[in-house]
Length: 227
Image 1: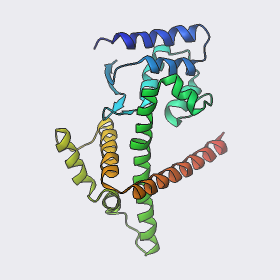
Image 2 (image 1 turned 90 degrees about the vertical axis):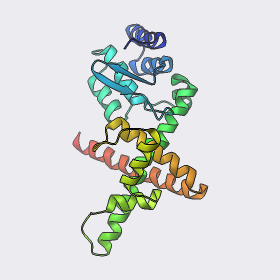
Image 3 (image 1 turned 120 degrees about the vertical axis):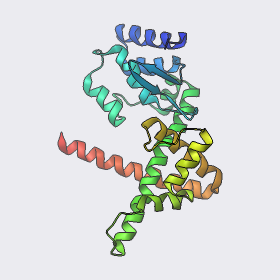
Image 4 (image 1 turned 180 degrees about the horizontal axis):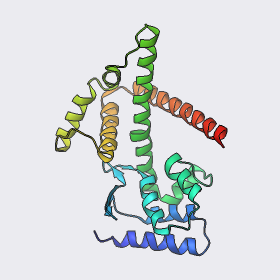
């Protein structure tokens, strides 16, 4: 697949800016602002940058672009960014928004709330159900995930996946790939926001954020102890 002109410019800017001494992370964010393709087949892999045509998975694009400057990015810094979402420097929200552009920042927020936090919400509710079961003397996990989906969305995971694929006119398959899983999660988020009242949506969002912060604290503590 031939690169779009804007994507060529993005890659060129990244290479030139890093060669001139600009920090690779800042050059990367500037290149992301220039990038235009929502998805791409490159080097034997399919890259999906815009989930559900609205939610920007910027770390996938970051990985793709960093391959263009392979060897110029410190390995630990790259691993921390791509796998732990830990950038090599702290930027204010306004700085990050300016560097990647307003439209991409808005799409990034769609991904943050509609994919990342939606996944965390499902984990949080699943965890609550497990705790209630254990408190009642039940130890099995059978049906826990479907109970969580029922509680959040009013249907089982399989029923929801069927509805998602039918609406999107996707083929029915036994497995769910990573790109489809993200799009499914974003679809669930939109379904929940559309059907639930504002107070319920706010409560669910607060629960997801609280759970995410707890996971991040545990992860940070684990990394500190292992270093």
